[in-house]
Image (cartoon, rainbow, N blue to C red; front, top):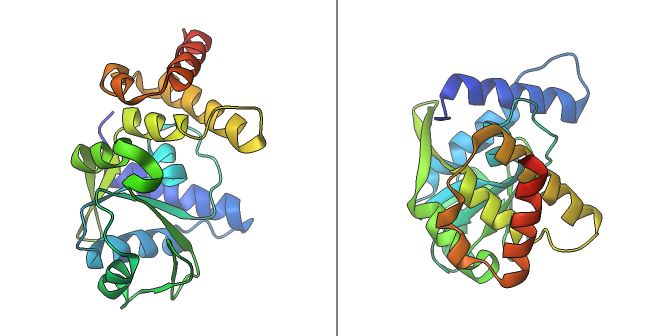
Length: 197
């Protein structure tokens, strides 16, 4: 499924509505923060995490932040300089949108492995408020989620459920990520694939 700006806007509206439990289902805060992030950011980057996942599935799940993968280990102080007109640095790899208060977490190759770099170099894109927004393809989102999906914690279970739903919704070409997986991640991917099958 190719991303399109209208469907992404509808997703942002549903997320805002569900996350803020309000009758006013506008996508404003998410849309504004994502558009401004990619307007100012000069580093090659791609939208991942909950917003990236939600773009591909029929029923989006709640997310409280914006996750971005970058291809380099550029110092976050440099990224902070680039996006300073709209964001402020609040932690080593965390920023907050100055207007909406939405947090933004950056994943670089130190945190996301080679998968982060591949996701950045091979995105889908949409146009959002005259800003090109790169969204990770489903296979790269799955690969990044596999890094955290091992085990029985609530976070691992959520990532496992996300992987299954992404596979059901998109049938991604998973062979591109297999060489980048550990044996444990590969085994989990095959187990999760069998649940979809």
